[in-house]
Length: 327
Length: 282
Image (cartoon, rainbow over all chains, first blue to last red; front, side, top):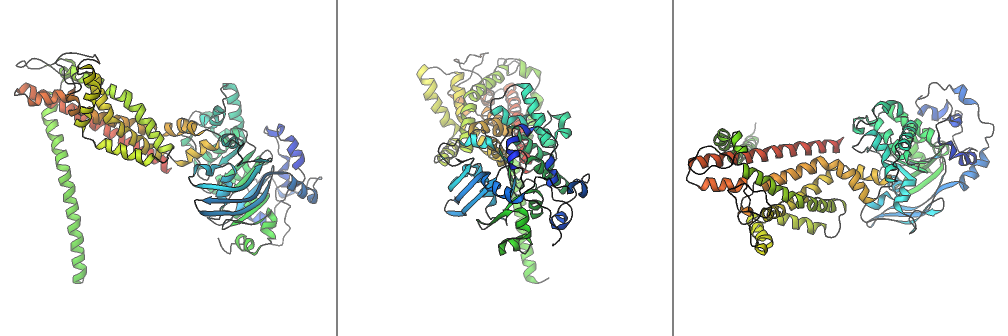
């Protein structure tokens, strides 16, 4: 546990990432792989070697511009989603109690906690998926780029286009692979075949599925394996070019190989998207996220850099949970 | 084995046997109907039955071409207005539940239970009396009214079988409520809804009472919507009541055709629903 812990926290790329955001969407080498936790230490033992081609040595060279104190502050000002005193009710039952947190842009934020702690309810509040549940309501504010998600001026349909979501259970539509990815584009009014083809290829490529399905784009999506279906759902969400990607336990129904593919994907995607992921799996949170929020009984117990949560939690409850003493 | 345990096992066994017997008793009528209809009807069914008009009394042969076409026209009219109304109503119940949903559901169930002869009288008052003429249209309206509650309920039930994840998936991509319903949920349930409609059609195709004073009957070839029209069921009823052996044979053949039609559609419906349920689980 005391071995050297590689820096996993936010580093000084937020500004350039922000500037490069719109242009950097095309698949290209990801220099930020470097910042992946290096071998050795607690985190490495949790992480299966999904990238054997990257030896610890090649990852060792830290970027020269790294300056952690500066970026820490930037991260706080560079928040994409801002939550203030958010409560949530199912009928009269209060399931979220005064949640406040800032979710940074272009980072992966993990929500962990025992079953029933409200993390799914919280993530579904961000794109107002809870609206479809009768008698459910949120109180407080959630803003995205300063715009109140629950404000009167916010159109929920437009909001959900900007905030993509991937669900625990993969939910491909019973249509072809192509039509699944085209769905969001078509409801946006896109009819141009060439444009559709292009975006569909790009989305599937980004979701690391293109090579597996390029020869059967018009086959039913239901014939894909569970892991492929989940990546298809990610491609479908990416096709409409959202700013934020919410993932509600995206790998909990998948086998370890499919899980590691999804995790790699999350790692690649964070350069361009702000990702919020709910997970039951603490190793997964440690592997993929920059920031981690620990929920318990509807309250936010602790929210900090991921390695701080796992290595030096401030709260006793957090420590008990991440070390597996309960939950 | 103690006496107590022996007694409990005996009681258990007796109940098992009683339940089994009840199943046998319940199935006897079905088996006998099928047996008699096949035995009497299958022999009389031939190509002429489908292509020829009825022969006058005393002449052997002939068919029910006019009644077969008449039945198709009648259920066509019924479907033309019962399917859109019933499906949209079912979509409303399943996808836009509100304060009145349970009332609407109850009303549909009551309408489903109204004796078909009463529906026939209603259609008589609605369509036949104003124009003072029995017509295919009146028969179609009566059958359509019988169809609506069945279509409403099957549509609703099948839509509710569609996995909730599909609904959420479409909404999460920025689809409007209606868009998600019509582009994802209804297509997913479509095979089931279609067979539900077919079952409803089969059910009303077997109705006689509501046609007696709406479509009446017609011994001649007619495809006019404003004229009385022949139908398989009324023809079977008429022939079965007649004293002629030839006509009895024709009635059996008609009954056989009806039963086969309904059986086929029911089996198809079961298969479609099973497919949907499998999708729901996976």
